[in-house]
Image (cartoon, rainbow over all chains, first blue to last red; front, side, top):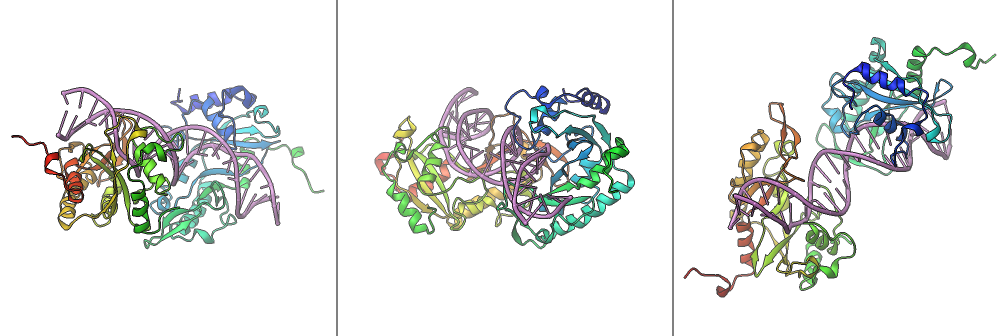
Length: 220
Length: 220
DNA sequence: GGGGATCCACTGTTGGATCCAG
DNA sequence: CTGGATCCAACAGTGGATCCCC
């Protein structure tokens, strides 16, 4: 069931194009904010996992749904959690962010319908960061990971980072987790996660599906 | 609700003496092998937790129920899990085993009734290991922890250890967890846990409630 | 008797993301 | 617009121990 090659994965994803999410829903799994992603992954034959690896470990491919309306991305894109203990042991090369972004299957989903079941799956595409993309993300990651590992996450806001940002990722604003600084001091940290900025992913989408001039609202 | 002093904790536990477990059960929590322990902890005002700390972190006290029949302990006593990654970073002084055994509230429960609800709570007592007890447990722990940390857990059996032993602790015999040796090699380990041998805890009980001579079956 | 196998509840964390106030 | 807040499901791990066959 799990796709063994990139080609099979892409073929399956393209076969979903045009279908509403209601077509691939089977039971009660279709609730909550992550429902679209969960449905698409299951339709692709990817088993649910709670591991910090790409969805297809053997292929090194991560699957991400992208909510779009008329070609415009409407949200930033979740990457992975930013647990201080894990970050303290990572370098960019060994990082989960790099591993997850090395190869991504983006699956656009038309978010113009309010009902989840009516949202139509778009044309999926595979992506790997260009050298410039990677340098950009790497720069952000090294800055952010360093601050988190040093226990300075509380001074970070989502304004930091050009392509990659850190934002809260928790049940609510009161959540705290134990963490310790490089010096071994314990403190209570807010759970944070890495996200790709909307503008960054929008450029990726535009590179694959060049926007028509008429689609671009002009100022004149 | 959570007892703030040892005195309050012990008073609450002694107030339970003589009562059947059915008295302190409220709902559906009373199933499975750990039900007696869960019921007693809740009756003492201890919140359920999934953390590798003593039940009362502020007091450093661990609560353990002891199944007894006529003064004789019928089971070995669970201490804590023996995850290789955690053990590799522990010394005896920093170990979870030492932290949990430093001060224990033992709550005997008469296991002669087959029905959980009919089992009567006995007379609780606080215990800390004597110097000799601690030396014994420490010796076992250092031997076992060293083997586990080195990835040699598969050569250990429950025969090893005079007071403290390692036994499987999992849903079933097929369970495996990822672990890595000190050299960084990954392998699949069986989940193991630390237990106190029945004979060791029996001596502790006998020190508090000296057995009558008639209670001791003799060979003659 | 005891070593090995197993049972149940709960929590913490991660993964999947979108919601919404200012 | 977007930074901060939040929603849901799944799973691994821990804690609570007892069961059972050799």
